[in-house]
Image 1 (cartoon, rainbow, N blue to C red):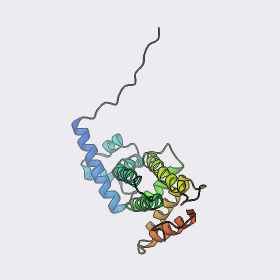
Image 2 (image 1 turned 45 degrees about the horizontal axis):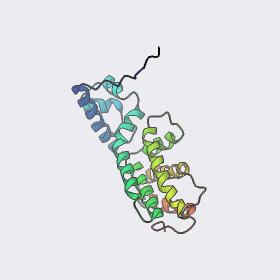
Image 3 (image 1 turned 120 degrees about the vertical axis):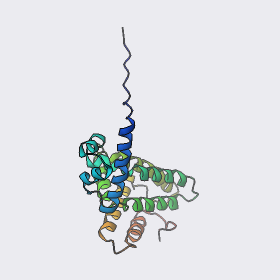
Image 4 (image 1 turned 60 degrees about the horizontal axis):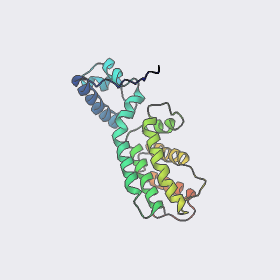
Length: 200
């Protein structure tokens, strides 16, 4: 006689564990903003009022903590991509979204490097950020290709790698705030079959 098996749901966190989790995220976001993604985990735990063991119980490694911190920004980018699907100009929509991605990756020093690494490591916790962004971008890219504005041989993985590389270059040149837009414009010119609005 066959038996039905069910997978147990994760146990909900206790109230104190939820508070610790929220404090760790808040302090990690502050630390990553101020010091980059290599900020001390011990300092983050101390500022959150917990021990380092508590941090590791919630986030087994630095990458898992980074992924959780950046999820809010990723959700915003995904929402923006859905809004841009209604744009009557698919190429401009793609340009706008890629600019938003560059701005996001430039928010925290070290984030662009982590996103670049996650492109080739889907087992990484950071893939929770990179994979949804890649999927959202592929839809916008396909719309631009469908109207003949972007070369048909261009893939979203290459576009996202270029976008993260631009963010990394900008991180290394903080005294040149115009650099990201210049590099993105050059990149877009290489992708286009015809001039794209706002890519000049």
